[in-house]
Length: 147
Image 1 (cartoon, rainbow, N blue to C red):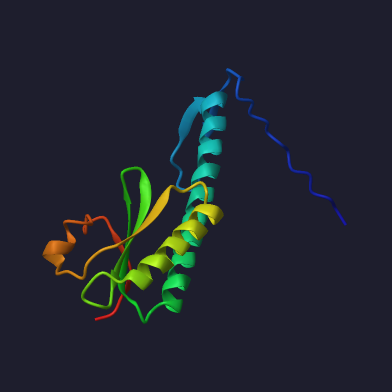
Image 2 (cartoon, rainbow, N blue to C red):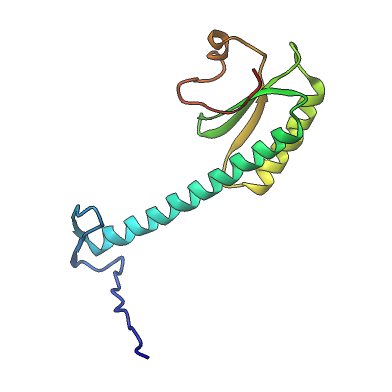
């Protein structure tokens, strides 16, 4: 049985040498070791952010599944440097019980996902025209909707 030894190429942040990086799509990046190391670091941070973002959306969706009797729809959007969750109640007015539950959800999200600055808001049931006063509907993601 033969052992395969992979050569490790070490790129140090303060190394001033030039490197050529060739990904699968045959695009080529000619850069410094410093920039290549920085790019790897940023790539890892982006992947981690994306994983945590999917986790927080799953958490909110599970919360909605437990509260479908009160939630007509839910939207998420990044606004003012934070992740916002907008909940429309099923009743045609402000739902105080739902508000209490959203406060608990807020606390849970802040505790579990401290790297996200997030907030939950209850907004009135509205047509698409009035909904746009609360949410940028072109950028928001609809997480739940009951027709």
